[in-house]
Length: 339
Ligand code: PHE
Image (tube, rainbow, N blue to C red):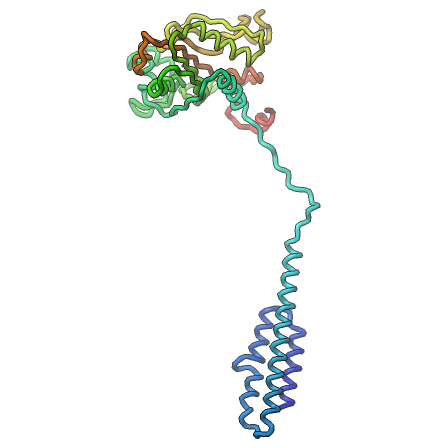
């Protein structure tokens, strides 16, 4: 029995020394120390021994068992150390390798111009109002003094969703929301998308952007309108920039004007850019029609106001000398990268 025990000890240790993975190690544990293992099988024969032999054999058997358990534990430890080592090596990061370059984005020219105008108006004490792009006919037309059969509706080719729901054709719709919910003094701008069913070409797009402005207070006059717009243009185009107001008609303003800005290419002389005019048309404006004020619950005998609406694309195209409006919407990175 003694020889058998020693043989198991040697065999196990030999097997252990050539064992290379955890699965194999487990097999060895079962093979030698398991319930049906070789050592157990020998121990079962213990009963056949004489009373004198038994204690010494028992001791030896226990020794072998402890010995093997320890050897197995050591091997297991060594194996897991090695596995960890392998894992660390495999996952090692070479911090000296060059990184993956991230391309930096840039701001869209429309966004840049909008931000610039927004800042100018915030500096003058305006706040920013937002309104829905899917709008009721009432806010886009009717409350702006354009009843259902008004001919001026035809000039804004409208995308109707139902008979009384549409995609707003102008940010003037926000005026009505603001006046319905705020009491004068009111001083807001409202930038946003507007929609008209225009065919796409170099100067038209079915989706474009406007910035609406609205001021309502006691004693607001046309001079305030002109002063405000002049300041805006001087901030945008320099202190020597001049504007001029031409009489026009909008149903929701009276009087109404179209506002031109002095051509910054020729400074009023007349050139190709301004088609010899010396001035370039930039926006529509006027004194808020008393009917519009009254419709929103504002007493037109106490309050007056002015409003204006400017097209962002037009300003951005002038600003960056972009010849084709489509470039603003195609999102070609070769174009966008330039800003
Ligand atoms: N909403 C007008 C347009 O889209 C512009 C405008 C705004 C005119 C406010 C007067 C006052 O053409």
